[in-house]
Amino acid sequence: MTTSWKDRPYRGRRRADRTPLPRKAENTAVQSPTLSLFVLIATVGIIAYTLFLLNPANRGDWLPYSLVITAEVMLVTQALVTMWTILSGGIDPRDFAFHHSQERIFDAETIERNGLSSTPEFWPMFLNEKPISVDVFITVYGEALDTIQRTTAAAIAMRGEHITWILDDGGSDAVRDLAEDLGARYLRRLSSHGAKAGNINHALNIATGEYFAVFDADFVPKEDFLYETVPFFVDDKVAFVQTPQAYGNMTNLISSGAGFMQSVFYRFIQPGRNRFNAAFCVGTNVVFRRTAILDVDGISTDSKSEDIWTSLRLHERGWRSIYIPVTLAIGDAPETVEDYTKQQLRWASGGFEILMRKNPLSPRTHLTMDQRLQYMVTATHYLVAITPFMLLLVPPLEIYFDLRPVNLTVTWVTWLLFYLGFYGLQILLAFHTMGSFRFETLVMATVSFPIYLRAFINVFSGKEQKWHVTGAAGKRSSPFNFMIPQVLIFVFLFLTSIVAVYKDIGHQTVTLATAWNVTNTVVFGVFIVAALGEAHAARVAEPARPELYPTFGRRVAPVRTAAARPVIASAMPSAAMTAAATTRVDAQTTRRIAG
Image 1 (spheres, rainbow, N blue to C red):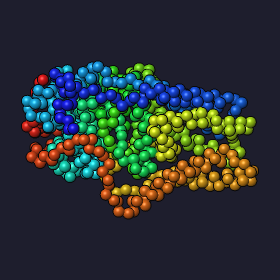
Image 2 (tube, one colour):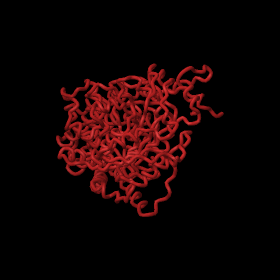
Image 3 (tube, rainbow, N blue to C red):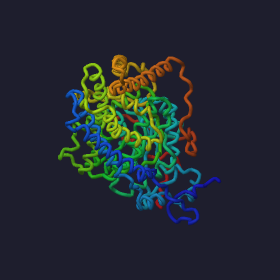
Image 4 (cartoon, helix red, strand yellow):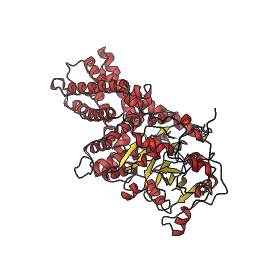
């Protein structure tokens, strides 16, 4: 049976027989007793493993022991805080004020009186009984035209009156023409200063909406994105509402590994940070309050990770953030080694910048203690991700130099039991989170440390990190241009495995060092094979890309060639441009009607 707009929530008098139940946040797993049990058991395993390592009677040779202790202390600390954050979750941020605001965000009489029943993208929205204005920014910098088209059409079709803008830092006439065809506004700067942050700040000089949503060019929003996020702003202290990054293209090792690596963060850690008012913006699929951004002098341009820095400044000023674990947009994970490397390099650089330039634990930071701890975990996340490098060195030290991290009296079975108490239980937790064990995640987490080492060195030396867009169009380089360290490490591990197997045959026993080193070799080998496949695919004609994104039951916005020509603005917009940009060009969208 087809449902009409009247079957959906609207503002004003409600029909009892058509009142829909409020949509629950998709975080029921956070409240799951099974998850809590997993977390508690994993915490016990972490503590047991730590006590085993710190026991002086178990200490082995100083070099491998130092490597293991340094790596594992960092991992244990991060794991314990992560467990605490997950256990702190489970509170749905959708309180009574949200639901009351959401059910009154659309006004039935206004919609009927103006003949907008069949065009929900033009329904006026209300907060606190007052009409509001919303801008939607799609940031563009060289992405494929069909990608931009898909996102723009979906953004225009979102339920609730809004103006959709394409913010083109790529300076493409084809994108300008696409904006005109779809009926979106178009903005172009004379320079790309400040990268994405500068692009948004420039748009704020033109657009005048009280709230603005931001989407990367490859994230396709659902029809109800505004309906699910805007009602939170009934609280005057809410600065932004963030939703997850979800991906529709997890089709190979790189994209699957990159996507699943973030599953725990978006499903459990970010919701837990709501408890501490420390959930931060991730740069896309987010709605901001304009006055909050103006209060911190715009989106931060001091870093390529403008999202985290802007969040930190907002929290320092006392603003509130909201994260809802509801998938409201689907985008692209990096599919190539080049895209993945550049994405992770930029993200890691942002974390290290916070660590080195603004220590979250400093008393000069105007944050609560809970917020300081959460931002410190964020700042050190990629530092912890370097630890696989130290652990990779432990087996070769035993194979070549007979140096062991633990005492000879400790059997490999005992070591393995405590080791599995730490890592095995976390794998089970990940299994519970993602539904199965994801080998792709293990591979990408293991082989990525050269990227994070490079990011650390870049930030420490003050080297500028060039902005890169995931999935940008253009000629691709060989994946091996971006993975020379991984190739060299694979060769070293492979040769070491041969030596280890040869020695074990001579001793007629299998050592833990051999098994450990062979496992590392296989992990790096899988990554090398994936890169070979990518290089081969790049040499042949690329097939037509399948449609990976559902329509979510949404009508695609029709092409409106009769709309006014899009606005093209320079870095210093004139008064005429500002006036033109803030004028509604569609007869229906010019209405600002009070309830």
